[in-house]
Amino acid sequence: QVQLVESGGGLVQAGGSLRLSCAASGRVLSSYVMGWFRQAPGKEREFVAAITWSGGDTYYRDSVKGRFTISRDNAKNTVYLQMNSLKPEDTAVYYCATRIVPPIATMTYEYRYWGQGTQVTVSS
Image 1 (tube, one colour):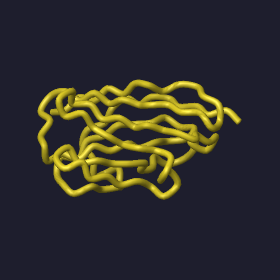
Image 2: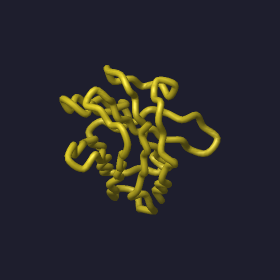
Image 3: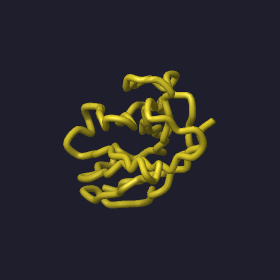
Image 4: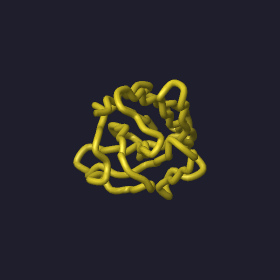
């Protein structure tokens, strides 16, 4: 069992930055994959980025490449999502999720554990 708690969301103007954090507790293994997803009102939840606990391999959706950076601190069992050059279309509830087997995946059903989400709102 893994518990995930996100933090760091808020309201920011277009072009601004935010850093989201996801603190994991429970049975976290080095083989796990950590992902960030987001869901805007009236839309399906979509993949944003993912990272492996062990090697730090990363993968991003095309629309955030070069703007978002996912990282992890193994000692703190925490994953981060640094979001720069934010756009209004980045507005969504952002969720942290855990996939218990490698490799990195992008579909929501491939992740077993989910946090409660944190709201990110980007004003124009």
